[in-house]
Figure 1 (cartoon, rainbow, N blue to C red):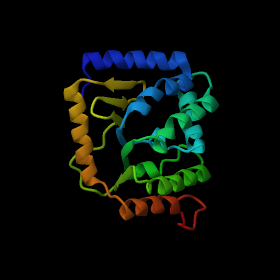
Figure 2: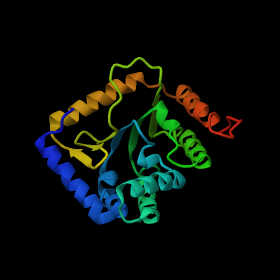
Figure 3: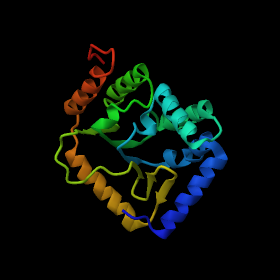
Amino acid sequence: MPASPHSAAQAARASIASRLDGMRRVHEKTVPLYERTAHFRVYASNVVPGMLQTADYATGLLRAITAFQGTPDDVADAVRARLNRSRVVHTGNHRFGLLLEEAVLSYQVCGGPELAGQLRYLLDVMARPNVSLGVIPVPARRTVWPLEAFYAFDDTQVAVETLTAEVNITAPGEVRTYLRAFAELSRTAVYGQGARDCLMRALASLPGRGDTGP
């Protein structure tokens, strides 16, 4: 979906701000948004959503981003800021609708043991009453094709992740389009035991992993 001129300008500003402030500052700036959001709807097509990342997984991912972008290394501080922001999953009155493409469970953006720890954490957190975790199986018949990752904050704002920037969308019509896409993708996902089965398969497929215990 082409971004509006307004969205494109926001993306450019976000990219510049990210390079100037560093990843830690970017995380800290979004804490108020996370704290006031009652209903998160997140679609992840590339990596585990930030709010569900373990410290080890986040470290591997952010180190790769830092190396690729050639920005100053503030990974340790950024990981701490990300984990601090992620407290909303365990505190306050927040609901989470989370959709992951099954391939995300196998992308090794960190080492094998670290990825195993991340998958185990997902198995734990999906049992929380405020978390709905769906996995879209690779063989699923699609009504909506794989999209760029996006985060919807209530019904008012959507953050879309691109290679060079985060595009923040607030135009009501565009927000409704992303919420509609989320609803359609939700119908393709599996939940409960089906989602656990996907996680267990990913865990069992890791090199050196012969067991499937959580």
